[in-house]
Amino acid sequence: MNLWLIIIGMGVITYAIRLSMIVMSGQIQLSDQLQRALRYVPPAVLSAIILPEMVQPGGTLDLSLGNERLLAGLIAILVAWFTKNMIWTVAVGMIALWILQAINL
Amino acid sequence: MMTSPRSELLAGIKAEIPITLGVLPFGLIYGVLAVSAGLPPTLAIASSSIVFAGSAQFIGAQLIGASTPMLVIWLTTFIVNLRHLLYSTSLAPQTTHLSRPWKWFLAYLLTDEAYVVTVLHYQDEKIPLQHKHWFWVGAGLTLWVTWQLSTATGVFFGTQLPASWSLDFTLALTFIGMVVPLCRERPNLAAALSAGLVAVFTFGWPYRLGLMTAALAGIAAGVIVENRQRRKERRV
Image (cartoon, rainbow over all chains, first blue to last red; front, side, top):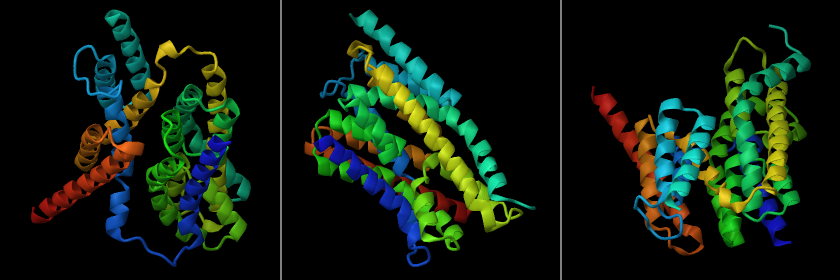
């Protein structure tokens, strides 16, 4: 099935990246600039997923108070900023979403 | 200091255990999300040993749920996991004395969470290099077991939870929990904000290519802000 192929391909790509420099150790050097650029991959990629999930939940831009995901996401951002705790962030964000959805019914 | 494979292995396990506490919920959420995105339960569980990379698995499940073409999913996986190139580069000099099978095995265990403790262990020069790779194995396998168990548990629960619970939103929340603390540093904040805004404006682009465009814009913004900071520091 196609889905298996997708996952196996993802595995091969991930493993190849992890193995690359270990196997070729000493033969290739990453430039200082490239090494610094790679450090910004996590915040950039993750944020590029978060923001559309918050402001475009149905596929179209929705900045109104009726957008529960936007409000719940903002609350979660505050929790993450002050607690730096993953479990609190997810728990408060989910509970906020459920409450807002119940109110907006 | 005297070390043995056994003592190093145990030290690696011990160093990794606190980190697994944060990984447990992440694995649970992944299991739930993968099932709600439409992955068959066996595949969702298998992906944790085939891919063995949390954020890539999360994003992959989301893209599969949105019926994204295979090549785009692979390209996205590549970009998301490029950071592992840094880990591979940083630990490579420590593996030159090891046999090829060892290198292949250690590379499989090179996750974010195992790297964090392993690189610190290698930096401790009081400990001889001889058995240090056993520490890497201890940390890596501890994480591997945690990831498999938590994912499988999540998949099990995921098949019984209703869609009205909006559990797919846990993905965004998990990522918020990872990104926001990073944003206390200015270049990270610039990277996150730029990438987020570009992602919103390119959301309608075909094949989710906006995601990659946004990621590249964010990386560029991070580098620019960092360079500016350095120049300022030099002037002071």
